[in-house]
Length: 219
Ligand SMILES: Nc1ncnc2c1ncn2[C@@H]1O[C@H](COP(=O)(O)OP(=O)(O)OP(=O)(O)O)[C@@H](O)[C@H]1O
Ligand SMILES: Nc1nc2c(ncn2[C@@H]2O[C@H](COP(=O)(O)O)[C@@H](O)[C@H]2O)c(=O)[nH]1
Image (cartoon, rainbow, N blue to C red; front, side):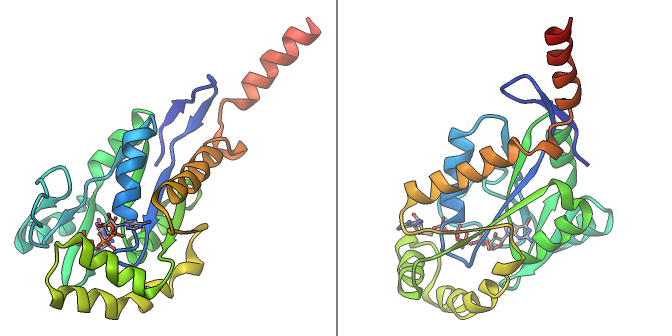
């Protein structure tokens, strides 16, 4: 699925799909925004959802807000790379922007749940790097959901009651980050992305780069 890109050091590599998941409120949207602001060559996958828009959210930027019939059409016509029902709403990843970003040499960042991560992994295991974000404690998780002040008490209760089940998928992920502090968690997630960009298997241009070095040394 990945196209080729040239990394900062001039060596070609395959693009990667960088996935953040967590129980609701652990901080993945916060970390996602920081990554998009601070990391070059990283494009956010904007999901489609049937969930109602929260105050401050922008259609097309935070999500593509669609109704259920439109979502069903997208799913049936293979427009979605993956999709799942989360907290009674439908969420899915539009396929075309992801393929376009990878072909243009960008990595793609996904804020999706464990069901979507499993589907991406089935499609492109070698190109998926997954990170599970944990809260430091249940009390912190609940406090964060209340501090965000964007969901009703009923919605927050529902998300808290499903947090334990979501967390049970932690062992399916490549990396686990505990979000005590935003800047520290960001730094850990950024280190993962930087290291994964340097992985030998992904760096398709290394053979010719090393051959060139050898020719210089021997010739
Ligand atoms: N390390 C942290 N310390 C304190 N507050 C935090 C921390 N990380 C995130 N928050 C706050 O917690 C709230 C929830 O964070 P965020 O929206 O990023 O969670 P999320 O995992 O994306 O949740 P959801 O899955 O519901 O979208 C926000 O108000 C955010 O500012
Ligand atoms: N499988 C997918 N899960 C997604 C997608 N977009 C978001 N999500 C996950 O849904 C929950 C709830 O999000 P919220 O914005 O309503 O708080 C959260 O775990 C997201 O990661 C998607 O395209 N596919």
